[in-house]
Length: 410
Picture 1: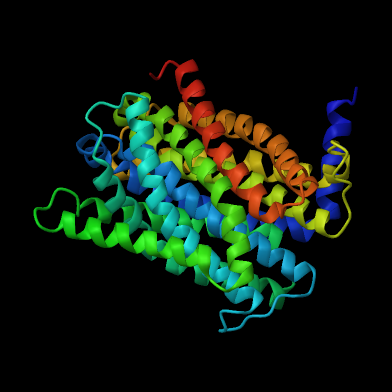
Picture 2: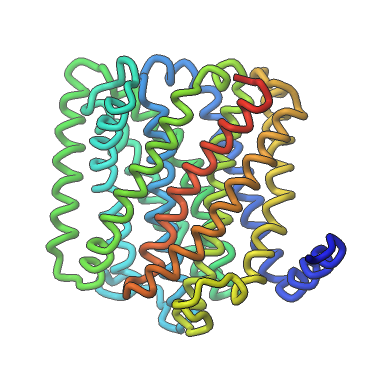
């Protein structure tokens, strides 16, 4: 059994062997965490809306996570194209980048509609009292997802292009930055869309436009003559729908224990950045494994973390300080804005313990999802990240509730 000193020495050696990866990952995760805290502050200030629209909290992790699934997978595919030398930015829709962009937009819009139906079904299945109607879910999900989708295309392609110019490893920076942008953009967009609910004469019209528009978009994506678009959509739809359902269960977990988060909005502030950070860390590992699989550096038939030991250590060397800082920042933001908090020590313990526990589970799943997809002949860029980010939401939500309960905050 290795002594703690040897483990530390080995960790330091591995981090030093990839200083650019550590530095780029830390910067990207720092930006992601800062953006997540802003999203958390928005969520913390939505306590009134969450109480007025029962079931909305179920949709939040799934809507935010779905944007990360779609555009995180887009970033991972672009990262693989960079590694293989096929990345070229073009305005033409029939190019590699163009078809990837079209597929991501189609998935984001059409899956918002699917997510609304599943959210209502999940709310009913888990007995959420007086949950909002399926029409309200559609309005909030589809309309609230339009603006983030358009902006995230620019962010994802921009980061890929910058990675080429500055010789960054896109696997280290795409997932955290895209996740951060998705958090910051999606939450306020959902909040704004919620104002369209219950407005006489307006809500039915918006519902019709949103529902028909999303359905037409889905049909176009499935029948388009662009072969890569069809392939990406057909491969991605099932896994992202399943991922969305899993994220909805994460929302149910939090919804079922809503009271401590209403009493202590500092804990509510933690939810978006903590779930995003767990997802980003797991996605970084998934993207790195995916690239190594495509380059033939990993044997997918062997379930061993040894070939990716350096990547795993990199993830945890980033995770521990980031979760600790997240806890401190969440409590400070709550204090500055006058929101309730159980105290700085409790908030830091919740963030650190719950975050690391969820990351441990996410790391194991990242390797399994990427290698399994590759063995089955599927592109791990399309399957790995959606599965990992969805389960990361669930892992993070469950870990958060467990730690909150263990500290007697319920």
